[in-house]
Image 1 (cartoon, rainbow, N blue to C red):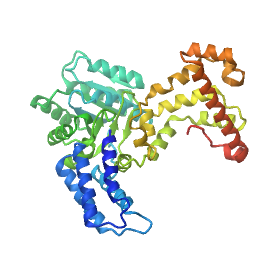
Image 2 (cartoon, rainbow, N blue to C red):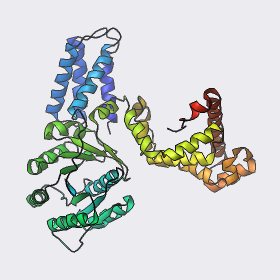
Image 3 (tube, one colour):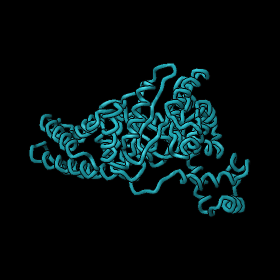
Image 4 (cartoon, rainbow, N blue to C red):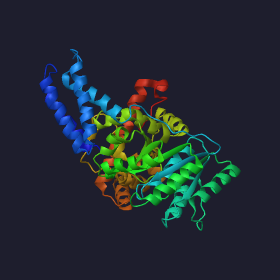
Amino acid sequence: MFDNLSTRLDQAFKTLKGQGQITEINVATTVKEIRRALIDADVNYKVAKQVTDKIKEEALGRDVLIAVSPGQLLTKIVEEELAELMGGTRVGVNISGDPAVVLIAGLQGSGKTTFSGKFANYLKKQGRNVLLTACDVYRPAAIDQLKVLGEQVGVDVYAEPENKKPLEIANNAIKYAQQQNHKIVIVDTAGRLAIDEAMMNEISSLKEALNPSETLFVVDAMTGQDAVNTAKAFNERLNFDGVVLTKLDGDTRGGAALSVKTVVEKPIKFVSNGEKMDALDVFYPDRMARRILDMGDVTTLVEKAQQAFDEEEAARLSKKIRKNQFDFNDFLSQLQQIKKMGNIKDLLGMLPGMGKAIKDLDVDDDSFKPIEAIIRSMTPKERETPEVINGSRKRRIAKGSGTDVQEVNNLLKQFAEMRKMMKKMNKMTGKRGMANINPFG
């Protein structure tokens, strides 16, 4: 999402490279470029001016240490100000009540229903008993879509397909939740193609009657400043608690993420990208600022790894590595767990300095398919002991996987190198040192 902004900011910082000190002249030039970069990213002009004025003030007010260059100092200041611009610190959701009610609002096409499914999945992983409620009585496929999502994540869905009264459906859902011991009720409401009075009256009435502990406004980040303006209009009527930015994996310049907190004065609580039900992240302003500046987001990467990797599987794998028995079955298992962590390109972008390197690369979840196909075309014996794979076996594996012999050879070579590295590490560290080694995590 922030590729272009990251590039423009990097170019702006280059103005200060080689400078021995910060002066009003060289800072003014750099700040001017930063402001242009922000406006080009569709950040509200007043917001862009406000933040760059603050950056300039901070830069001129700080002394440059001998060990820190002016460029490094300004990068740090920009990181701090971008984080502050987006809210400063993470703001959690308020889940209270018996059951707790979470109201989801937004325009049609913003991704409300998909977010409802993702949010239910997020809460379920925390051990909470969730009920999804279908209150979009206008869009023909909305109820069916929510049922499909509920089935995907293993969460109950309450719906009354023949009832066209959203408030009645929501109240009945709350009664049902109390009977079935559901602790949280997520209410997916109707959207419209544009803001209109009927829509505002309906969602306002729902909020007033249900008294939800949390009201979340879902907005499509790809609509840029229109997203911010829509959020502002909704907030004036709803006084919602937080914003959810969807479609961050799309072709968007990022202005909504950078402007919405300042303009609407409500925090971004979640960001969503992709259609997978686990493609939902809690929004941390400081982490997002670091990603914009291509400084990485290792904390989020580690958290995703911890969620994806099974402890028992990790212990089993460590034991096999210690005995030099890591095979293609283990390799395939690890690939599956990596895929659970999310979009591959997004994960690589969390590594410091990788944003610019992979900007133009076409990396997606299909990247692993040829490798998986090759491994699945092997016999059980070949997976366990790759050394037995000779020329005729390679031809059979290539044919069965829809690849060529060269690709099979490359995978076998890379796998042999990996095992050699593991064996070397095993000898160097001994049993105690290998206990926590995971080649992928």
